Length: 109
Image 1 (cartoon, rainbow, N blue to C red):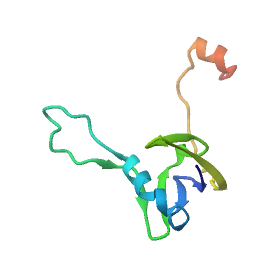
Image 2 (image 1 turned 120 degrees about the vertical axis):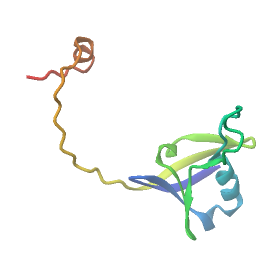
Image 3 (image 1 turned 90 degrees about the vertical axis):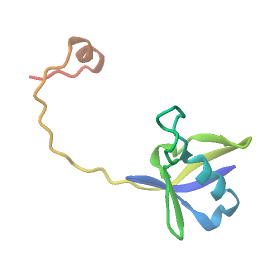
Image 4 (image 1 turned 30 degrees about the vertical axis):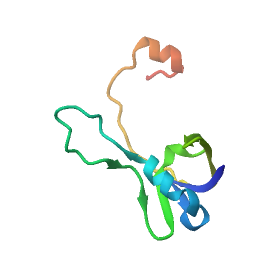
């Protein structure tokens, strides 16, 4: 199954009315259980999706990858992109290790 979606700066967006049959399975897949041990017995599951009336928003890193839910392979196809890079101003005050310089070919003056 292929799910077409839109990639944004923070999410992969899936139109809910287009994939009604699989939305609940996706919500369940993106609800993560904590590891069970003596100290975490009462912790609630962590939900790693958002939703509104129109879209289900899942982590953006799922775009153009496959997952398997209940034996069904789902491919998340990025149909459109609304991804805008943000310019940041950083000052690098350290020196790269020699092996990193060799690997990247990048040197500071």
